Amino acid sequence: MSLLRDGIIHHATSVLCSNKGSMASSQLYEQIMKSFDVTQGDFWFIMKCARFEVKRTGVDDDSVVVAKTSLRLCKEYWKGTCYEEKCEELHICKYYVYGNCRFGKNEKPCKHSHDLRCPHNQSLLRDCTLQDLPEEDLFLLLMQNDPSLLPEVCVHYNRGGVPDGACTFRDSCTKLHLCLHHTQGRCRFGERCQRLHAVDHRGLKLLQERGLRAGDFIRDLPGIYQNRHHLLAAAAAQQASGGGSGPQGETSKVNICLHFLRRRCQFEDQCILVHFNMPYKWEVWKGGAWCDLRHMEEIELAYCDPEARKSPGSRPVDFLTMTQGSRSLPVRRLSTVSSVTKPPHYTLTTEWVWYYRDNHRSWVEYGQPDSGQRTTSVTSRDLEQAYQKNPFNKVPIMKGFRKYLLSFKDMYQWNQALDTRRPVRRRPRFLSAAGLATLTAR
Image 1 (cartoon, helix red, strand yellow):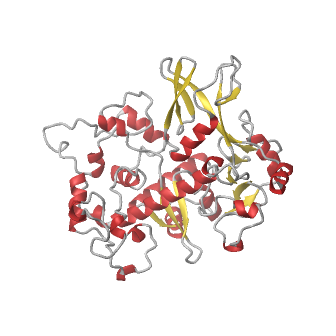
Image 2 (cartoon, rainbow, N blue to C red):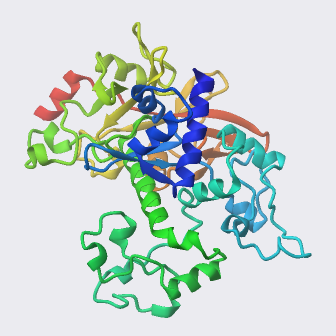
Image 3 (tube, rainbow, N blue to C red):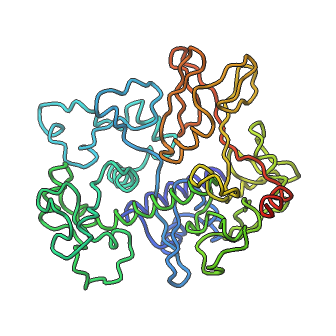
């Protein structure tokens, strides 16, 4: 089953990239059926893979599947300052990705690699099962996932009257003049819109100055921006929820409504947030929908313990993979927003606690003394605030005379001098139903 699943994932990625990075789920399923005998239920189960994002269209209950990847181009490599042997980003010339590197076509060699098959890049591609994807498809996948590769759309152009809106730079603007609503897939004016829905000669000049090739890619660019917008919005929604991986059939309803918990939500059924009687909610994906898990409080209690890898019971939830059972059904945890994003009197927010594993393999909260009465230079709250600002950041930490670097992306604490790594975990502070009743009464 694993080999079949990997084959379907690889084929679906190739089909999506050959169709400008996304397509209707019904059409994708038809394409998959030409090469694989897979049920519609198994097809949707495979869509929970990190390679895809599912966007509801509201048209005939269909959805759009967007290809995604966690791979990025290494910015430090481009500057010539990446010295990490275990760097997890591609070391490749960005102009080669653009398809327009002027050095690779003549006798003067490019100082940046054009080799995707070098050991460093090949290892990363293999980890993501992208090693057999054609270069052109891989580069499109990177374009719609790596925000650094394409220029931003000018917000000021989208304010005020045409032709340039409120943009004072006009011809010298370094951002793309396109209809922002169109690049987000929700322009209600369509062809009647007075703002640009396609790249004009000025935008073409800007893109060529950045090194992007002309041709079909430029013509397809608004669609790539739509895909990129959806991926960024889905990532932001998942980050806000603090939840795990799984099919993102509904990326809008991931936060639990604080006002509903206080019985004061004026929007009722029209609220864009989840209405639930606890500040956390555990769900499992089965039958093409998110379903409530039983014994949520027991699962939450176990999850709040940084030592716990699984919940109790005959069908435990694996907290590291966020799956359940032998079929590895995707699980997610919805919650109220992080406590650091609201004033202190918002008592029903989620307090996230950061832990590291010490020399005795015990989990110690950041800012609290360890067995040797030593404390870190940052507290758990400091880390949560930094994480909310940038979940891909690296934070320097001191403990005694030792220096560490905490990577949010990899969830480890790295001692650069000794080249040792300690695992890091982010878990919520437990709140029982009885504790919630006390808080709401207060």
